Amino acid sequence: MSTGVLEDRTTTLDESNPDTRQPSSLARLLPFLRPYRWHFTGSIVVALIATLTGLVIPLVLQGVIDGPITDGNFAGVWWPAALVLFLGTVDAVGIWVRRYLVSAPSSQFEISARAAVFEKLQRLSVSAHESWESGQLLSRAIADLSSLRRFVAFVGPFIIINTVTLIVGLGVLFVQSWQLGLIMAVTSVPLVIVCTRFETLYRVVARDAQDQAGDVTTTVEESIQGIRVLKAFGRSAHLSRRFLREAATLRGTEMKKVRYLAIVWELIVGIPPVGIGVMLAFGAYSIVQGTMTAGMLVAAMAIVAFLLWPIESFGFLLAELNNARTAADRYWEIMDTPETITEPKQPVPLPRDIRGVLEFRGVGFTFPDASSPLLTDVDFRVEPGETVALVGVTGSGKTALTNLVPRLFDVTSGSVTIDGVDIRTLALADLRSVVSVAFEDPVLFSASVRENIALGRPEATDADVDEALGIAHAREFVETLPWGLDTRIGEQGMSLSGGQRQRLALARAVLGKPRILVLDDPLSALDVGTEALVQQDLRRVLPHSTTVLVAHRPSTAALADRVLYLENGRIVEQGTHERLLATSAKYRHVMGSIDV
Ligand SMILES: Nc1ncnc2c1ncn2[C@@H]1O[C@H](COP(=O)(O)OP(=O)(O)OP(=O)(O)O)[C@@H](O)[C@H]1O
Image (cartoon, rainbow, N blue to C red):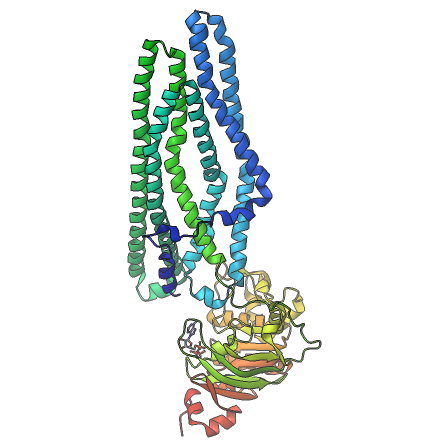
């Protein structure tokens, strides 16, 4: 896959001007939370009540010191002690209720956002997928969404809770003694400056770290998928070095994050004691002067001690806020990718009793990232029951042409029609219900043989599946599998040979005798004997469909009623296989016949 887009994406955040980031990427997630708005509001209210009860304790302390203790009345301590116990219980219950209220909704948020990104990936065109590295997609769909869940469950609420706690605490301090409140407020100014600066710096490294984690995921994923090639070519060590290099880069960025965090923590933890010292000195002086009671000073100190955690937690909360913002930016980069293969606004219904006349009319096609057209003025018509083979040198555009029929790509000029209807005006589900495809590289999923074959037609009966297996000459080997049709194959199941996989992909394509069949060199991995057997049966079923068949071998081309010879994206010759063999030197060359 291309790396260019990754490079583009890692630089979408202009480091010199961090404000180029979409400011509302987190706010755009609110619709996911709307169904649980009362849970989240309730959890914040409960947490606020629980936290603010803690602020009452210093006032109780003041009452005890200036009252019963000063008066030597020990019996007067019981009620305040019971009150403190009650406030502590309220705090503990509040913590539990808050967690109870947010845990299920925040997990549900993660699931919904992940489902939305998965659906978006399904809707995105093949070209969009080709422009993203798979690891980047994985890290966005998995790690970034976990970071967002932490944000909605914990970080976001606590930014609100701690801010309110600080404001209320400062207010109580001002009411107690405006001088002590002022000292505390002045001490907060450097903290605000530190936090703002930290926020700006951390945002850039947070983005780098998340992109680099995507690179590492890509390398791991590629090394697992390509393990055979890597081993066969002895390149495992090379990939290990790449992995270690990327992991080291990521480690460097993570260490940078830790350094920023350490500095900010140091300042956040270090600055308040200066204020506390000044407050203590002022308080002691005031007590001596008789303008403040000992209880007032103890209460003020207890309030400041109570506010230390909300202050200190801001370093961590701001770091998490930035991780979440970057995660949200990266999430919306996927969600905002334009969908190029779209449903028509008002789909034309499929013609009743569809015949399956497939026509390419003046078709031109250029890949989205290519500078010149691949296909030019391609005109041909395939009648129902007819089989047309596409032949041409490698890279001449045969696969690209077949991809236009199920709209994996859209034509850039001209049109492709089925029974005279432009396929772009049909609903995608309708189009794909009449077009069946077998790709050159047969992809099987982690599922049973039956599920793999009935992928496009889940309603297919056992008899349909059996017939398709028969046509692809796959019945025998499927019967030898441990659980027959129910054997799990694909990535996490039984390994099959290339020819077996290809036959299952062919069975999947011919299942239910589709109106239009697109086969990209479907027999290339079969031995000559098996190929001959499959061809015999294919010959029997092809007349039921309109078939476009990419052929590299004479035996495959011979299945077709007509052959189109592609050169530089144009059809330059056409006729029956035999006629082209007899008349075209180019054709004979491509078919591997000795030129005469
Ligand atoms: N996604 C893409 N973006 C840009 N160019 C592409 C893309 N996919 C394929 N190409 C280029 O388009 C050209 C035609 O590719 P295509 O796969 O259609 O050839 P083909 O005739 O089927 O070849 P083969 O016989 O080797 O299968 C090639 O030069 C290929 O590099």
